[in-house]
Amino acid sequence: MALIVFLVGPTAVGKTALSLRLAPLINAEIVSCDSMQVYKGIEIANSKPLPEERKIVRHYMLDVVSPDKEYSVADYRREALSSIEEIRGKGKIPLIVGGSGLYFKSLLDGIFAGPSRNQELRENLYSEAKLKGVESLYERLKDVDPEIAKRIHPHDLRRIIRALEVYSLTGTPISILQKKTAGLALQHQTVIYGLMRSRSELYRRINERVEKMFTQGLVEEIKNLKKLKITPIAQQCLGYREISAYLEGKLTIAEAKELLKKATRQFARRQLIWFRRDKRISWINLDKETDLDTLAEELAKQIKQLII
Image 1: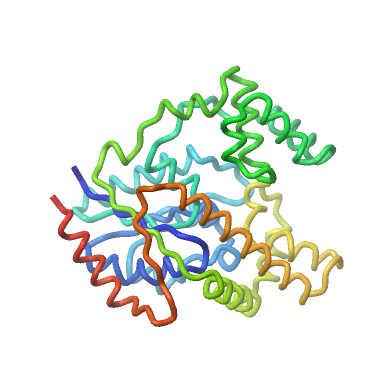
Image 2: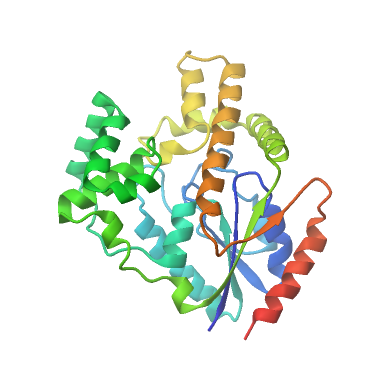
Protein backbone atom coordinates (compact mmCIF):
# COMPACT_ATOMS: atom_id res chain seq x y z
CA MET A 1 0.00 0.00 0.00
CA ALA A 2 1.26 3.45 -0.94
CA LEU A 3 1.87 6.00 1.81
CA ILE A 4 0.00 9.32 1.83
CA VAL A 5 0.83 12.01 4.40
CA PHE A 6 -1.62 14.64 5.66
CA LEU A 7 -0.68 17.88 7.43
CA VAL A 8 -3.74 19.71 8.78
CA GLY A 9 -4.66 22.38 11.30
CA PRO A 10 -6.18 25.84 11.69
CA THR A 11 -5.30 28.88 9.65
CA ALA A 12 -2.02 30.64 10.54
CA VAL A 13 -0.75 27.72 12.63
CA GLY A 14 2.29 27.17 10.37
CA LYS A 15 1.28 24.40 7.95
CA THR A 16 2.87 25.97 4.87
CA ALA A 17 6.18 26.71 6.57
CA LEU A 18 6.50 23.16 7.89
CA SER A 19 5.35 21.51 4.65
CA LEU A 20 8.00 23.36 2.64
CA ARG A 21 10.67 21.94 4.97
CA LEU A 22 9.18 18.45 5.18
CA ALA A 23 8.43 17.77 1.52
CA PRO A 24 12.05 17.71 0.25
CA LEU A 25 13.09 15.42 3.12
CA ILE A 26 10.55 12.73 2.19
CA ASN A 27 10.59 13.18 -1.61
CA ALA A 28 7.07 14.60 -1.61
CA GLU A 29 4.98 16.99 -3.65
CA ILE A 30 2.18 19.00 -2.06
CA VAL A 31 -1.55 18.80 -2.72
CA SER A 32 -3.45 21.77 -1.28
CA CYS A 33 -6.47 20.86 0.84
CA ASP A 34 -7.99 24.33 1.02
CA SER A 35 -11.46 25.16 -0.27
CA MET A 36 -10.49 28.75 -1.10
CA GLN A 37 -7.03 28.26 -2.59
CA VAL A 38 -8.58 26.50 -5.58
CA TYR A 39 -9.73 29.91 -6.87
CA LYS A 40 -7.70 31.93 -9.33
CA GLY A 41 -7.03 35.56 -8.53
CA ILE A 42 -7.57 35.31 -4.78
CA GLU A 43 -4.00 35.33 -3.52
CA ILE A 44 -3.81 37.54 -0.44
CA ALA A 45 -7.21 36.75 1.07
CA ASN A 46 -6.48 33.03 0.83
CA SER A 47 -2.84 33.21 2.00
CA LYS A 48 -1.62 31.06 -0.87
CA PRO A 49 1.99 29.87 -0.92
CA LEU A 50 4.10 32.53 -2.63
CA PRO A 51 5.48 31.94 -6.15
CA GLU A 52 9.00 31.49 -4.73
CA GLU A 53 7.67 28.92 -2.25
CA ARG A 54 6.01 26.97 -5.05
CA LYS A 55 9.41 26.75 -6.74
CA ILE A 56 10.80 24.90 -3.72
CA VAL A 57 8.16 22.17 -3.95
CA ARG A 58 5.59 21.56 -6.65
CA HIS A 59 2.05 22.32 -5.50
CA TYR A 60 -1.21 20.94 -6.86
CA MET A 61 -4.82 22.14 -6.50
CA LEU A 62 -3.99 25.84 -6.47
CA ASP A 63 -5.65 28.19 -8.99
CA VAL A 64 -7.77 25.50 -10.62
CA VAL A 65 -11.04 27.42 -11.14
CA SER A 66 -12.26 30.96 -11.69
CA PRO A 67 -14.15 32.38 -8.68
CA ASP A 68 -17.20 33.03 -10.87
CA LYS A 69 -17.54 29.29 -11.56
CA GLU A 70 -19.29 26.75 -9.33
CA TYR A 71 -16.90 24.29 -7.70
CA SER A 72 -17.96 21.47 -5.40
CA VAL A 73 -16.36 19.10 -2.93
CA ALA A 74 -16.86 16.36 -5.52
CA ASP A 75 -14.96 18.46 -8.10
CA TYR A 76 -12.12 18.93 -5.65
CA ARG A 77 -11.97 15.26 -4.70
CA ARG A 78 -11.87 14.11 -8.32
CA GLU A 79 -9.06 16.49 -9.29
CA ALA A 80 -7.11 16.02 -6.06
CA LEU A 81 -7.17 12.23 -6.47
CA SER A 82 -5.86 12.67 -10.01
CA SER A 83 -3.03 14.84 -8.62
CA ILE A 84 -2.25 12.23 -5.98
CA GLU A 85 -1.97 9.54 -8.64
CA GLU A 86 0.29 11.78 -10.72
CA ILE A 87 2.60 12.26 -7.74
CA ARG A 88 2.63 8.54 -6.98
CA GLY A 89 3.42 7.85 -10.63
CA LYS A 90 6.64 9.81 -10.18
CA GLY A 91 7.59 7.62 -7.23
CA LYS A 92 7.01 10.50 -4.82
CA ILE A 93 4.88 10.81 -1.69
CA PRO A 94 1.69 12.92 -1.83
CA LEU A 95 1.73 15.44 1.03
CA ILE A 96 -1.81 16.77 1.58
CA VAL A 97 -1.68 20.17 3.30
CA GLY A 98 -4.55 22.38 4.38
CA GLY A 99 -7.25 23.32 6.83
CA SER A 100 -10.52 22.62 5.02
CA GLY A 101 -12.14 19.87 7.05
CA LEU A 102 -14.71 18.91 4.43
CA TYR A 103 -12.08 18.58 1.69
CA PHE A 104 -9.89 16.59 4.08
CA LYS A 105 -12.73 14.21 4.88
CA SER A 106 -13.70 13.82 1.22
CA LEU A 107 -10.20 12.53 0.45
CA LEU A 108 -9.73 10.42 3.53
CA ASP A 109 -13.19 8.86 3.80
CA GLY A 110 -14.73 9.49 0.39
CA ILE A 111 -18.04 11.12 -0.44
CA PHE A 112 -21.39 9.64 -1.24
CA ALA A 113 -22.59 9.36 -4.83
CA GLY A 114 -25.16 12.11 -4.38
CA PRO A 115 -27.18 13.95 -7.02
CA SER A 116 -25.67 16.72 -9.09
CA ARG A 117 -26.40 20.28 -8.03
CA ASN A 118 -29.79 21.65 -8.97
CA GLN A 119 -29.26 25.34 -9.71
CA GLU A 120 -32.94 26.32 -9.55
CA LEU A 121 -33.41 24.60 -6.20
CA ARG A 122 -30.23 26.18 -4.81
CA GLU A 123 -31.25 29.66 -5.93
CA ASN A 124 -34.62 29.20 -4.24
CA LEU A 125 -32.94 28.11 -1.00
CA TYR A 126 -30.48 31.01 -1.11
CA SER A 127 -33.39 33.41 -1.70
CA GLU A 128 -35.26 31.93 1.24
CA ALA A 129 -32.20 32.31 3.46
CA LYS A 130 -31.89 35.94 2.40
CA LEU A 131 -35.57 36.57 3.10
CA LYS A 132 -36.09 34.56 6.29
CA GLY A 133 -32.54 34.04 7.55
CA VAL A 134 -30.21 31.05 7.64
CA GLU A 135 -31.90 29.91 10.84
CA SER A 136 -35.11 29.00 8.99
CA LEU A 137 -33.22 26.61 6.69
CA TYR A 138 -31.31 25.16 9.61
CA GLU A 139 -34.55 24.44 11.49
CA ARG A 140 -35.89 22.65 8.42
CA LEU A 141 -32.68 20.62 8.21
CA LYS A 142 -33.07 19.57 11.85
CA ASP A 143 -36.49 18.20 10.97
CA VAL A 144 -35.43 16.17 7.92
CA ASP A 145 -31.91 15.15 8.97
CA PRO A 146 -31.17 15.78 12.67
CA GLU A 147 -27.93 13.77 12.50
CA ILE A 148 -26.31 15.96 9.85
CA ALA A 149 -27.70 19.10 11.53
CA LYS A 150 -25.64 18.26 14.62
CA ARG A 151 -22.48 18.21 12.48
CA ILE A 152 -23.17 21.45 10.58
CA HIS A 153 -22.73 24.90 12.09
CA PRO A 154 -26.08 26.76 12.16
CA HIS A 155 -24.58 29.54 10.01
CA ASP A 156 -22.84 27.29 7.45
CA LEU A 157 -25.28 28.19 4.67
CA ARG A 158 -23.44 26.30 1.92
CA ARG A 159 -23.57 22.93 3.69
CA ILE A 160 -27.12 23.49 4.97
CA ILE A 161 -28.30 24.13 1.42
CA ARG A 162 -26.45 21.10 0.04
CA ALA A 163 -27.99 18.85 2.70
CA LEU A 164 -31.48 20.17 1.96
CA GLU A 165 -30.84 19.87 -1.77
CA VAL A 166 -29.84 16.21 -1.46
CA TYR A 167 -32.88 15.43 0.68
CA SER A 168 -35.20 17.21 -1.75
CA LEU A 169 -33.79 15.38 -4.76
CA THR A 170 -33.42 11.89 -3.24
CA GLY A 171 -35.82 11.74 -0.32
CA THR A 172 -32.94 10.30 1.73
CA PRO A 173 -31.02 12.20 4.44
CA ILE A 174 -27.48 13.04 3.41
CA SER A 175 -26.22 11.56 6.72
CA ILE A 176 -27.40 8.13 5.56
CA LEU A 177 -25.92 8.48 2.07
CA GLN A 178 -22.57 9.58 3.50
CA LYS A 179 -22.16 6.26 5.28
CA LYS A 180 -21.88 4.50 1.91
CA THR A 181 -18.44 5.89 1.10
CA ALA A 182 -14.82 4.77 0.75
CA GLY A 183 -11.72 6.93 0.59
CA LEU A 184 -7.94 6.95 0.84
CA ALA A 185 -8.02 5.65 4.42
CA LEU A 186 -9.24 2.27 3.15
CA GLN A 187 -7.15 2.19 -0.01
CA HIS A 188 -3.74 3.42 1.17
CA GLN A 189 -1.53 3.70 4.19
CA THR A 190 -2.06 7.15 5.66
CA VAL A 191 -0.42 9.19 8.40
CA ILE A 192 -2.10 12.38 9.61
CA TYR A 193 -0.32 15.12 11.54
CA GLY A 194 -2.27 18.00 13.05
CA LEU A 195 -0.64 21.25 14.09
CA MET A 196 -1.86 23.32 17.01
CA ARG A 197 -0.67 26.20 19.17
CA SER A 198 -1.88 27.77 22.37
CA ARG A 199 -4.90 29.99 21.83
CA SER A 200 -2.99 33.17 22.67
CA GLU A 201 -0.13 32.30 20.31
CA LEU A 202 -2.45 31.30 17.47
CA TYR A 203 -4.49 34.49 17.85
CA ARG A 204 -1.31 36.57 17.86
CA ARG A 205 -0.25 34.95 14.59
CA ILE A 206 -3.70 35.50 13.10
CA ASN A 207 -3.61 39.19 14.01
CA GLU A 208 -0.15 39.53 12.47
CA ARG A 209 -1.31 37.77 9.31
CA VAL A 210 -4.28 40.10 8.92
CA GLU A 211 -2.05 43.16 9.33
CA LYS A 212 0.27 41.74 6.66
CA MET A 213 -2.65 41.04 4.30
CA PHE A 214 -3.61 44.71 4.38
CA THR A 215 -0.05 45.84 3.61
CA GLN A 216 0.12 43.32 0.75
CA GLY A 217 -2.92 44.87 -0.96
CA LEU A 218 -5.98 43.03 0.35
CA VAL A 219 -8.30 45.99 -0.27
CA GLU A 220 -7.30 46.23 -3.93
CA GLU A 221 -7.67 42.46 -4.38
CA ILE A 222 -11.22 42.46 -2.99
CA LYS A 223 -12.06 45.56 -5.04
CA ASN A 224 -11.07 43.65 -8.19
CA LEU A 225 -13.05 40.59 -7.11
CA LYS A 226 -16.16 42.71 -6.65
CA LYS A 227 -16.01 43.58 -10.34
CA LEU A 228 -16.66 39.92 -11.08
CA LYS A 229 -19.84 37.98 -10.38
CA ILE A 230 -18.13 35.51 -8.06
CA THR A 231 -20.06 32.62 -6.54
CA PRO A 232 -21.48 32.69 -3.00
CA ILE A 233 -18.89 30.08 -2.05
CA ALA A 234 -15.98 32.17 -3.36
CA GLN A 235 -17.38 35.13 -1.40
CA GLN A 236 -16.66 33.19 1.79
CA CYS A 237 -12.94 33.91 1.44
CA LEU A 238 -11.59 35.71 4.48
CA GLY A 239 -11.86 39.45 4.09
CA TYR A 240 -14.47 39.63 1.35
CA ARG A 241 -17.34 40.61 3.65
CA GLU A 242 -15.31 43.07 5.75
CA ILE A 243 -13.57 44.81 2.84
CA SER A 244 -16.84 44.98 0.90
CA ALA A 245 -18.41 46.79 3.83
CA TYR A 246 -15.45 49.20 3.89
CA LEU A 247 -15.71 49.85 0.15
CA GLU A 248 -19.43 50.53 0.56
CA GLY A 249 -18.71 53.10 3.27
CA LYS A 250 -20.25 51.01 6.05
CA LEU A 251 -16.98 50.54 7.96
CA THR A 252 -13.75 52.42 8.44
CA ILE A 253 -10.57 50.64 7.40
CA ALA A 254 -9.67 50.17 11.07
CA GLU A 255 -13.08 48.65 11.80
CA ALA A 256 -12.79 46.33 8.80
CA LYS A 257 -9.38 45.18 9.96
CA GLU A 258 -10.57 44.39 13.49
CA LEU A 259 -13.64 42.56 12.22
CA LEU A 260 -11.47 40.47 9.92
CA LYS A 261 -9.19 39.54 12.81
CA LYS A 262 -12.22 38.47 14.81
CA ALA A 263 -13.71 36.50 11.90
CA THR A 264 -10.41 34.73 11.29
CA ARG A 265 -10.11 33.77 14.96
CA GLN A 266 -13.65 32.37 14.84
CA PHE A 267 -12.79 30.48 11.66
CA ALA A 268 -9.72 28.95 13.33
CA ARG A 269 -11.87 27.80 16.27
CA ARG A 270 -14.29 26.07 13.90
CA GLN A 271 -11.40 24.35 12.13
CA LEU A 272 -10.02 23.04 15.41
CA ILE A 273 -13.42 21.78 16.52
CA TRP A 274 -13.73 19.87 13.25
CA PHE A 275 -10.27 18.30 13.32
CA ARG A 276 -10.31 17.44 17.03
CA ARG A 277 -13.22 15.09 16.39
CA ASP A 278 -10.98 12.92 14.22
CA LYS A 279 -9.09 10.47 16.45
CA ARG A 280 -6.78 9.45 13.60
CA ILE A 281 -4.87 12.72 13.81
CA SER A 282 -1.53 12.82 15.66
CA TRP A 283 -1.31 16.28 17.18
CA ILE A 284 1.87 18.34 17.38
CA ASN A 285 2.02 21.35 19.69
CA LEU A 286 4.03 24.26 18.32
CA ASP A 287 5.22 27.33 20.20
CA LYS A 288 7.55 30.27 19.65
CA GLU A 289 10.57 28.10 20.44
CA THR A 290 9.72 25.33 17.96
CA ASP A 291 12.45 24.90 15.37
CA LEU A 292 10.63 23.87 12.20
CA ASP A 293 13.75 22.47 10.55
CA THR A 294 14.30 20.11 13.48
CA LEU A 295 10.62 19.18 13.59
CA ALA A 296 10.62 18.43 9.87
CA GLU A 297 13.63 16.13 10.29
CA GLU A 298 11.90 14.28 13.14
CA LEU A 299 8.72 13.81 11.13
CA ALA A 300 10.71 12.68 8.09
CA LYS A 301 12.33 9.94 10.18
CA GLN A 302 8.92 8.75 11.36
CA ILE A 303 7.50 8.78 7.84
CA LYS A 304 10.43 6.91 6.29
CA GLN A 305 9.95 4.13 8.84
CA LEU A 306 6.37 3.71 7.55
CA ILE A 307 7.32 3.34 3.91
CA ILE A 308 6.70 -0.23 2.81
